[in-house]
Every structure is written in structure tokens, then in C-alpha cells.
Image (cartoon, rainbow, N blue to C red):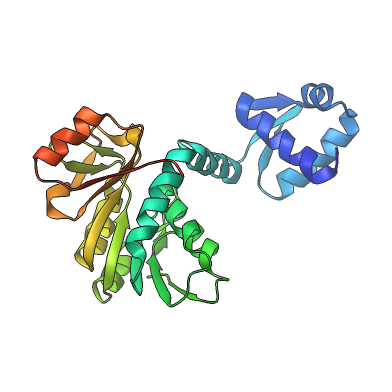
Length: 256
């Protein structure tokens, strides 16, 4: 096992178990304790682990990275189907907005190779996905990076978004209830989401089936106020029908 992959495996083991001893890591990886100590020294210098007596635990940076990667991996196929459906709505648009959700990150990946498109996003990962695309201009509205997620927030973000206009915005959600209320868990993010919605001609909420039929900490809007919901084919069809009976447009994205 080469050094980089071994160190990645060490981080994975520590993430799974919370803390590991040098001996435990050496036995699992089939290497010497000296090799493990050298790897832990490198990882500690990078801020990815914190050395403990006889072992190591995750550092804050690594904890954040693993939490974000876990969010991305949840319902990945559903998010890809939603992204495919969303990309069809982008056809003919020149300016769009994407929030910082992992579902809209999947949409950003779908836009690689496009031309003549400007993407306004509060998501640092989405910006990174598109920054080297010659046909796509990426605009970050500025602001503070949220501690628990790699996206922008704050009054500067909100005021800059107020100056911009997009043809379509895609917003993620942590929950959507049967009345069409759309929720987010971090309440400090709701103002940015509302500003993005106000700055777009059309607004779609992109949320996989696991978000439906639930509520969360802060309601930031209603589907009736916007242009619809894009979800995946694993959704509860009765729940979707209930939304449609309320006059809400629901796009059910089928697997590719």
C-alpha cells in the first residue's frame, strides 16, 4: 500500500472508530508501528488527526471533510437523477443560481462542458467543479464561509445577491412537509436562500425522496410561491400527489 492511500485508510479507520491506537492501526494495515507513527506525524502536521497517547483521533478539519463527504454520498443516485432533470431546465438559460446543498452540487457537475453560462453560487465545491470550464463563468457573491459547511453566508452574501439577477435558481432543502413548506436546519442560512429565490425569475427546490414528508428547524418558503419541486422516483407517490393537488408542480426524475 503506497503512502497516500495508507494515510487515507488511516483517516478512514479513525473516522469510523473515533480513536485508534498505533498498534491497532499497524495490525489492521499490516505495517510496522514505526510506519504508522510516521504517517500519523504527517497527518497531524496537516491538521487531519490529533495525536493522543498511543494513537490518534480526528482533527476538526478531518471531521468536517468526512461529514461533508458523507452528505455527498447519501442517496447519490437520487441526486444524480435530479441533477439530470434540472439540467434540462437550464437549457437556453444564460445565468443560473445554485445554493450550497449537495443536490445542487450534483447539478453543478452536470454543467461541465456547457458554454455561454454564468453560474452564481454560494457553494465553494460547486465553484471548484466549474472553475476550469472555459464556457462557464462562475460568480461567488462573497461573504463568510460557514463553519459547518463549505458555503457562503452573511449580510455581505445577501446584499451582493440582491444586486444580481438569474433566470433560474435551484435550492436544496432539509425537509418538505405535506403543505409544501420548505425547511432548512441551519437557521442562519435561510436569509441567503430567500435572497437567491428573490433574485431569480424561476425557482425550483431540488430535494431527494428522503427529505419529503418531514419538517426541520426553519421554514424559509413554500413550494406554492415558486416554480416547483424536483425529486426522484423513490419518492412517496401519494405524498407527491398531495402536493400536486395543492397546485404544486412536481418533477419526478427517473434514473438514467
